[in-house]
Amino acid sequence: MKFSTPLIPGKLVKRYKRFLADVELTDGSIVTSHTTNTGSMLGLIEPGSPVWLSESDNPKRKLKYTWEIGAAAVTPVGVNTSVPNKLVFEEISAGNVSELTGYSTIKREIKYGKNSRIDVFLQEPDRPDCYVEVKSVTLSRKPDIAEFPDAVSSRGTKHLQELGDMVEQGHRAVMFYLAQRSDCSTFSTAKDIDPMYANALIEAMARGVEVVAYSCRVCPDGIYLDKPLTLGI
Image (tube, rainbow, N blue to C red; front, top):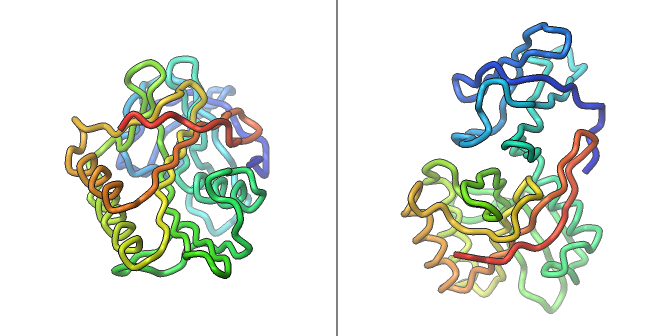
């Protein structure tokens, strides 16, 4: 997925009020950017760390900058949580996700469960409908291991339960973890951060929910699907 406009480099001053971040641009000016990520962003909010922002020309926006990429040491990490849904949709549509090929109908944001919307919905005659939930993964505390979540996620636990319900209704359900970084080969749950979520994933898998995890190549011109991750759940 290519960015529509070139990203603007800077250095993080601070993240605050969850949705805001002050960034120092290369000319020394300080701007406030919107942060879509509602998690803790553990490992990515060190003052002075490199960041890249997108700039909107929409005059109705209160903040014209959005934080797109951060950095964990020397590794660029995509932090915009709206990117994974779009990227996964594009890659499935292009036939680049081997686990999710063979569907002629693909849609986004379809209502299901209890007041929820599934990120990607796949359909093909003579096959069970397929419900795909996508999660953005940014955390990595141990070399080579991507982890989710980076904060307690009751909403994520609810989604796992609803995916299990879909399986029991005769459908196919897939939990898709997209690590927006390239330095990991394994995916695992962060059991110490949210043990309820970790247990809910194990229960969902026992009910027939499939788990898929991929890494990404992240650079200032775009974020691209890279390789499947080994599951270390």
